[in-house]
Length: 481
Image (tube, rainbow, N blue to C red; front, side, top):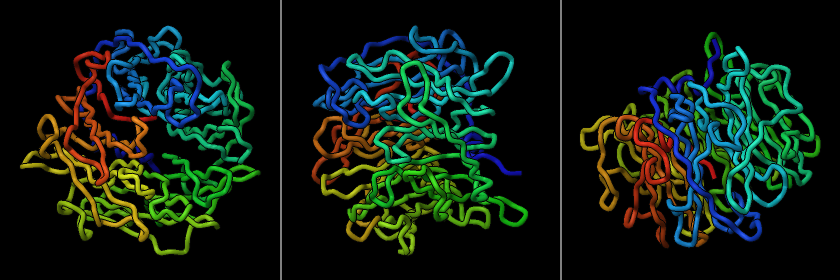
């Protein structure tokens, strides 16, 4: 039976689901919107949303919340923050145990006002007596940051079964307005809410796409980006397809255009992906992570996991042979060991200002100094040759200069984010370890310089310094911004 990718992820990353008390914080202000992606308060600096999906909200365990930390000229500033949950006065819904608010996040300017908005897929939201019915909440950016939100109310798909399971934003039809893609687990699996989306929660239209019927691949995880360099955003649909009597992970590229998203070529399957220009040719490349071992069902896995690069071109997917990188690839630090989960999480950004997109790769199953699943992160460098092992760096909690120390089952690297929060044109590295301190979670901030990411000057914080509670919450399991 076909299963969703997230089921596999949750099984491997299982831990006790308990929560903590929600506290409120305050946002920052700006005179006018910057229009910069990821800037919730319009001050010209990118901000960061940090999910704590099993934290308490309104005294309900596992209701979940999101902490937002705002960017400044000195980078992310923990004193400028806010907490968002269904217990917040201007956020729709009521906190309920098992909602996991925050475990699906994306961002985009959905109403076209110049401020980046935060989108939360509350796929486990119950409506009446129906479990896992699903809702999609938009929290609007403003000069005061993220404060008010609305659920998308119309038009809605006929079947909302876990609506919000997957999320992505982009201009999929090239009309200059931001659209929202949302996955549910009933056909049509992919729903495109056409922009703009009004402050009352009404989309300009709705298009349903049954990816299983069209391509044989179910819509599960979705990743937006521009592969062919035109004016419309493309969408990578990751899921599974039937192969004989079994299912294997597989992905398909849907190309954007005036008539909307249309299926194009199939690419390597996996469990996470990014679209970024790693060889600086002007076209987005699809980088797919598959943390599983190579097998018939996981042909794109590898020893301890693998990353596959399918290159972009004016036609969409290039005829160039995809590149495959593992920890056994030349110049990649460390060694490929079964269970490392190399490729569990991915993020793209230019870490040294050379114009090539680099890729942060989470390796949360890496054993460190004998401590099982302590976790690591590898940063791969983009170049004219594409993504290679040359210049790659690796970081753990035992790396000199990194605060704290590696402990068994921390799963450092389960989430990664490359983002330029201080506007110096070099992306810093943000690493999450949701299992840190028995599920409390934690976030590490790494600085960057001319040579890329450095451990020198790195910092670490948990939920409490940004207004959250002490106690298990999986703080840092998901990032957006």
